[in-house]
Amino acid sequence: KTLAEHVEPSVGQRSQRELLSPDTNRMVTQLESRIKELKSWLRETELFIFNLNLRPEAQQCESATQDADDPQHDPQATKQLQHFK
Image (tube, rainbow, N blue to C red; front, side, top):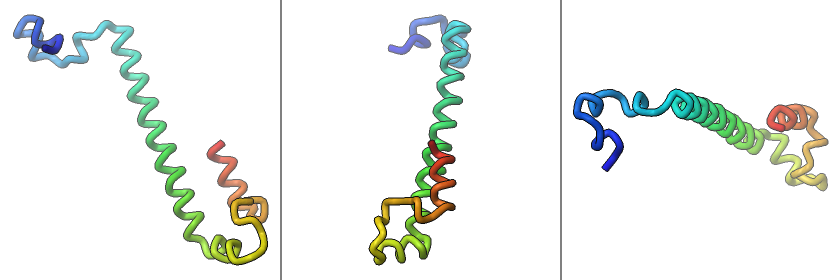
């Protein structure tokens, strides 16, 4: 059984968040906020990698003798990578 099932029925109708102490409630709010930030960062990173692989220069670099994993030949990629560090 959950905590809400063990308390009075009138309390069970309230939000489960209200059953938490103020400090715990604040920590849950902070965690939710941090999770949103991390999801946003992950999405941006995935889009950056996806778009980087779609660029025509990426295909040319792969066929050239330069190392395709070395972003130093592309100043724009270097700048974008710095954004994620």
